Image 1 (tube, rainbow, N blue to C red):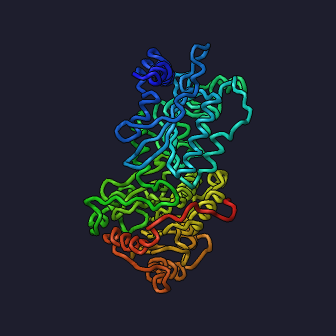
Image 2: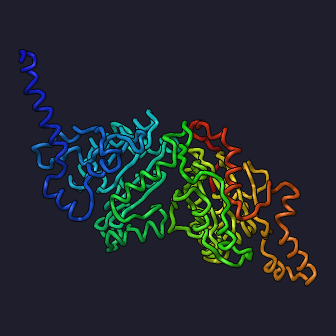
Image 3: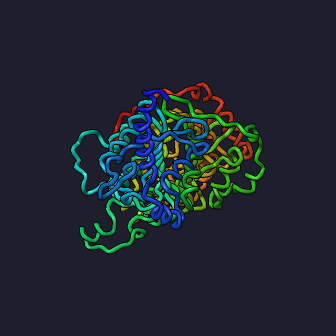
Length: 506
């Protein structure tokens, strides 16, 4: 060994020793407790996300100066890096609960922002895995760099952003979730602005983590979290599936994934599933699964605003977004939760030029005192604005009924940049159903009968004036959607960069 090589020996030994410290996480005892609770540790979570379990670490030496101190913090309780998901580069960071409860120190704060900086510069998707206590009380907050929330806000609409809540997440870390496009949580997880001890001190309320921010709160009631999954592995698998429907960034076209079920086909089952009587409910979720490429339907936010189905799917190998009223839930009427869900979903898919398919079967927006107190008009107006501003392809299909503003917010407005507008032959349309309108206006029998006849022939009346491009046999719904998507092929060849919207959302 040369003299120079010998001198390197001690230096490289020290490098490896310090690198090994960063990988110790919280030590064997805490790692064992994490495993016993049924959860993966931070490094295992990243390995599960990336193809082949391989990732390149970023910031592995943060916290290295804490070794030997009162509070050792390997990687400063935040493991970050990049690898591939389905062969495409993706960035990710995971809070390490085994180190100081996953709390955020100043080195980790800088690392979190560094991830957003790289994501913006290299135009890569970013995934956060949350299980931590927020900022440490000992942090100096000297403002030396922007924080990751600023970075996420700047990234919005540029690259796909995913947040997975995999344990208790509080404070600054929890704020990551609402700034991301898609949020999933496990059954063991909870998320809140402040944890139970702070809540008790601030407002005197005694609650558990689950009561404060568990799945029953944020999946079922607040809508902060989109999807609930069983455990860490399922959350990570869902993140991988979700990313498969999106381009890596707004400058790229959505990926195409052809399968054995990409071609045209008639769906005979639709005649049994969908009654021509608009008062008869059916499962829109079942209809969606029959129409799209087999096995490709991923419902987003199924437990919130359930009268409206939102989901991602493939039709002919093309990625699409589906917004569909479900007549089996409150007759498909759109309430505040459904409208809020749809507006966010439209913003996300519009940012990445994913075609939107509207399957309409509703009696309008929800009526009544409860609906008015919930702000239904404002939420519905926000959904209307979101679909009107959409610049990705729009395809509308009226299945059976569409009344009042319920038709407008489902993209039924004539000549509103739809690529294709279809109707089943037995639809009924109008400002409101004839029965209610006739009773309210005290119409005579002859006038009532005339209005009923006009509503019954709505498809042909509107098709005569080119408000519908075609009236279709229900069995040909998939084929009609394939034809509409074929018209958009030139638009789908590439992305055009981030979408810049004018106007103020209601």
